[in-house]
Image (cartoon, rainbow, N blue to C red; front, side, top):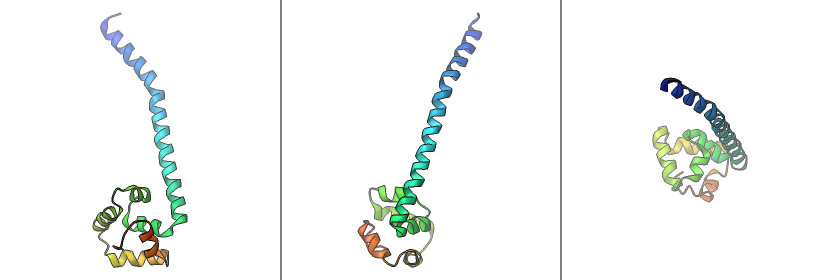
Length: 112
């Protein structure tokens, strides 16, 4: 066998060995996305105001809750959304009559 054939053989061997690993990575990524969706849905059932806030700001509830500085995260998202505090506040109150109190309890401060 010449060196070109040996290299092609090694590449084919590599591709055969890596294919199951790539499939496993895809399966893990899919499972993570599904877990994230399910967790966010459950959080929204527990606290509708969080779902409304995440929807209004087009952010992930999980990212919002896991942010090191939740208030800064929300403020930055508000700036990107172009919505005013009043508009967001109205949407949140429509989602829950206790929206402001709920958000304070969850560490989102007085900004909303």
